[in-house]
Length: 125
Image (tube, rainbow, N blue to C red):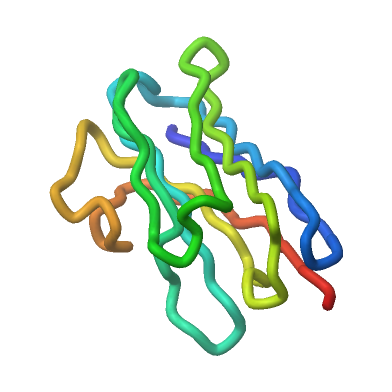
C-alpha cells in the first residue's frame, strides 16, 4: 500500500522560510516523479513544483520560481519542498503526490496516482 506522509508545515511570518518533507512508502521511490501542490480555501489545487523520477531535474510554477526548491533523497524515500521568501498568498494546504516515471502533464492534478494528506502552511503579514 502506497503512503505519502507530509510534515513540516506551520505558521511563519512573511519573508520567512519553511521546509516541507514527504516520506513515501510502498513504492519504488526512484521510479516516481514527485510533485507538490497547494490548495487555498475555496480554490482549486494548484501545481507548485515537481522533481523527475530517479535523479531528474525539477520544474516549478512561475509563482514560486526563485523562491521554492524541490529536491529528493532517494536513499530516504523522501521529497522536500524548501520554501523561502514566503508571502501571505502562499498560505494553503500543501500536498505531495507521486506518479510513476514522468507524465507529460506533470503540472496537472490528474497526472498523479497517489497523494498525501496535506500539511497546512500559514504565512502571516
